[in-house]
Image 1 (cartoon, rainbow, N blue to C red):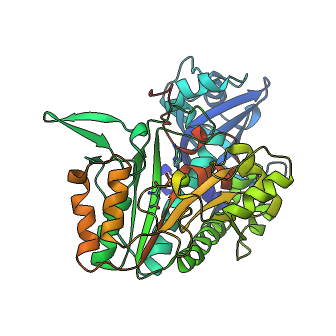
Image 2: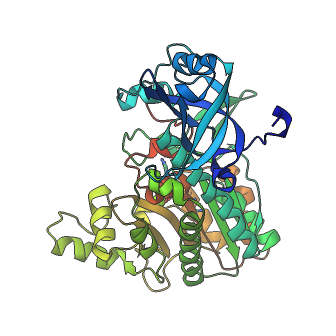
Image 3: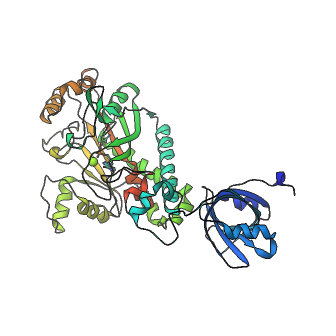
Length: 436
Ligand code: 4AD
Ligand code: MG
């Protein structure tokens, strides 16, 4: 066969080329072997597999090249694809030729094992490794599935600005920046813009970065994270909760369908994940949640926000994602709808994920009344100049509407089983990390 007849393929497609000679462009992850045989661990961005170079079967210079290869050298390998029952991938290549493309010397992430801080200092390289690969492929599935789900539900995507003049989720968590001599803030949420969009298009969702200058160093908080925020005109909270659980089940099912390899690489329990697609999710009022916690020896009083231990207990108690509904007004945002018969709680819900992954969705019905919202904005010490446009939405054809926000990285950690949210985004931003 001449070189032009050899197909260039991707590792993921090896199963379709058993018994054929192919060429693959990739990188060398690791290498082991003896004087007679070299095992090349290869990756190409689609999957991981092994190339075997047998000294007796190849020209001397090919075996010499194989022996000299360093970690992360880029190369073309040519050879025949074989089934390989010993590897979880199932196929390998009997290498007959190697062409080095780009050399690599002293690659810093060696097989010996490193601390997490080091790996994240080298995140631009660490992306190439198995755990980030699998996690971020699943993130990508969640993003694509989000567009698919909301498109099929009749939503349009509406892009919210990231430079804003206001602080809807509380003034203590703002990143401030200079905007031609005025103060501007990096957006905490696209919601208020989504509400304007819902009054124009009926059902919209925003999807983009959100910024929170949170001084919390937990495994669930980033200072820059990505949020999906649907907003629906003429929809009450009940219908919104039904939409939310359908969305979560849709996301999990897509990952089960499309990321079998990645879930295996991460050793995520697929049956457990599948169990979370059984609808409906339980709905528990904040009042009942407090009672349940107190009955189980938690030292919590009505009115407090839940911390991580409380959230973990509640979700594990139901072995499923659980909606905690109708929180105290004092601990929630100004725009949430008043309860029709109580003035101490609002019509809202947080969705808590099981296994300790915490709050993955926060949402509510929105209050529709101009005077009430104006008073709430003033009460919260927010500026009426900044929120005048938002109040217009209650002045010109106000309608019942609801919405919610899903934290993408929280969802990624939940689906992948990662223990820290920094794994769930390519380049995490946290209180003590802004590089690389
Ligand atoms: O509960 P939050 O603050 O709600 C809002 O921002 C609303 N405007 C949403 C809406 O109704 N349109 O944030 C929503 C979700 C949380 O449930 C959580 O999943 C995620 O965003 N989130 C964070 N994720 C990572 N790091 C942080 N610091 C986060 N803060 C919130
Ligand atoms: Mg919240």
